[in-house]
Image 1: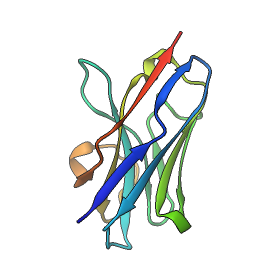
Image 2 (image 1 turned 180 degrees about the vertical axis):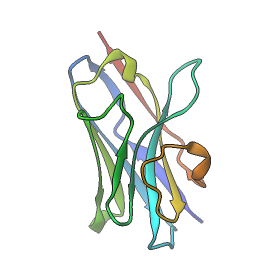
Image 3 (image 1 turned 45 degrees about the vertical axis):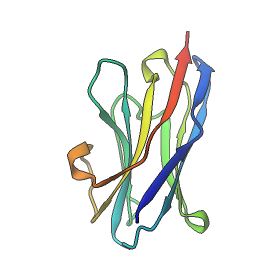
Image 4 (image 1 turned 90 degrees about the vertical axis):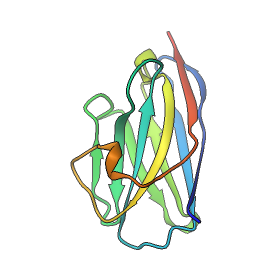
Length: 124
C-alpha cells in the first residue's frame, strides 16, 4: 500500500523559510514523478513543484527562484525547501506521486497517490 506522509509545515513570518518533507513507502516504481501541490482556502489546488526519477524539476512561476524540490535517496524522502515566504504561500501543502516521468506540467489529475497535507501559514 502506497503511503505518503508530509511534515514540516508551520507558521512563519514573511521572509522566512520552511522545509517540507514527504516520506514515501510502499511505492514500487523506479520510474516516477513526485510533486508538491497546495490549496489555499476558497481556491483550487495548484501545482508547486515536481521532480521525476531523472531528477528533472518543474516549478510554478509563483515559487520559482524561492523553492527547491529534491530527493533524499537514503531516506526515500522528498523535500520542498521554501524561502522568502509570502502570505500568498499560505495553504495546505500536499505531496503526490505517480508512475512515469512527467516534466514541465503541474497538473494534479496526473498524480495517483496523495498525502494528507501539512499546513503552511505565512504572516505579514
